[in-house]
Length: 444
Image (cartoon, rainbow, N blue to C red; front, side, top):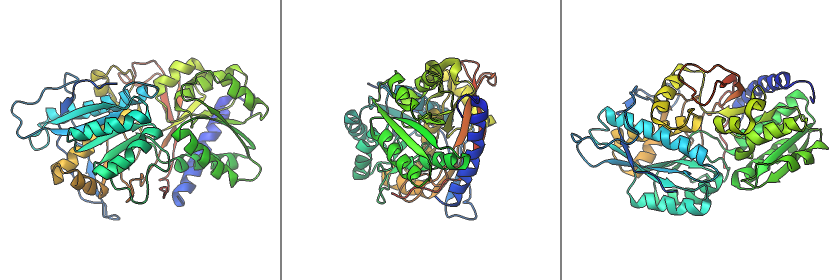
């Protein structure tokens, strides 16, 4: 594939992924002041073929300020929801997206009168992108009597907090924490929302390699929970293939100069580079591989797209592809993004922010239906499916909290122009090239 041009190779990758995912579907720092917002949720009848109830998120309008004061006419105590996400550290770009998505939902809900007259109050806890800080941050939010927490980024933090969620019986939502061992068969209070478990991410890539007849695949992973989970999943998936050589290089999480790791792959002469296991490195890997003449597609790590563009620049256009839980081509995403950009310092609404918005929306719906007891909320959520604005698929879970019908969209960064008012970070815009059929949930 080397030297054949990345668009042709990338398009082949994307078309193949659509077939592969269909086959999978047939088988398997300190936070700022709390933000208060509210939204009434509408519940509709359950789908005919399941026992779950489908909820459509209400249409709301953006509030004028990022932090809303409680409505003096509101009745009852506020409904506290924890924002458990990195506001500092390596994964802050993901966490700031989540936080602002949650803030937008809270503001819009409060502007509509709250949940039965009660305002939503967001209590922010900074995990600092560090597993050792994640647990204490969780416990501090628990002491604030939050009814749920959302926004977990990093598998290490997910591993450090999932046990606490079960022990303290507080519904906790993962956004980008995909290590397969975060969930167990007994998990009942932890819910994935955007990134599925590592095996659900690795299998389509390996099956693509087989479908395209690739024989040499390079990968760079980060030395932490997600990277090692993806490494194990890739070794398992590629180990079932014949004639495909997989070479994996391990880099530190903060690494931004991947020259050494890429040179280690030169002897392999890879036909594809998988950067899925190194989220902070997706952009630099893209541009540095091109600089070294390794002219092959790069699959990303569910990364924040402005971060990729910051690291790769024009080298990412037409070459960098990634999976997303947001449908950037949809009108409801674009409407949501315009409202988001009105209250956020971020120049683009990434899928992490879409997930954050959805988390608050779903918790508000649960409180409206069963009250503010966290145990009742968790039980209620397990019986629901949600059609959330901006999402690429219907939200619902297995008994143990895995995404039940994940259908990630595969995108490539295109040169744009972006739809009006939707991207303040540049003229580029993600182009949808394929969407999977529902992936089979991973059973831990």
